Image (cartoon, rainbow, N blue to C red; front, side, top):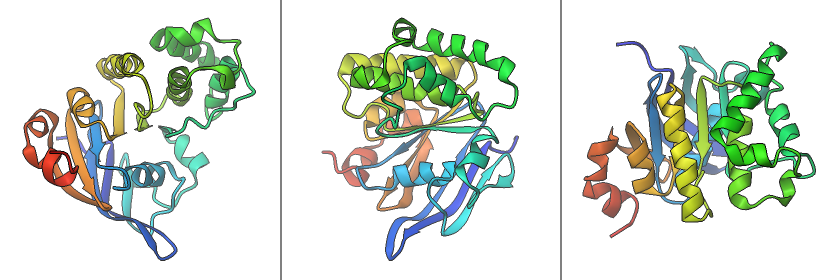
Length: 239
């Protein structure tokens, strides 16, 4: 069996005296979609931020392609082949859709790849092609979420990190987003997906981990987790 693309071992993240993540371990095989589940405050965002270099690991390791990247700056990590689509979008609101996408391609050493990557972004999210000259700040929440994901794809990452992509979106837009993730998966894109929507994530993922108060408490194949009452009742507080 080949080693995982991403391997997190006993990750700990502290903010002063506060513990954001206490003990998280997980693996993401190449070509897989792995869901990171948990209620609000469970530590999902902190884990993704630690992988992306936005949060600093206080302990443990974050290995990407066998290299421990924990503690490296975000600009160095994205150049290694990871990209984060953050919760809350963090777009350049006064810039056009296309300019936001071009900013996502900043880490690329080979600028000749940019036209192909733009075409890919517009193919994955056709609505962005229709709005390529529109300012990002004037778009709907669903369109901004599409743009945040497409911007992350512009660096052509081996591993795409998605933080709460369905949060606050209308059901029809959520369906569009997840159809796009499934298409990316079929094309071989590796994805680590943090979600509060359990059924949605598990229907898309190959494997899943559940966090509770900053710790990995349950893991297994996504199809098995769909039928696991502990996921709903104990760890997510859903009856």
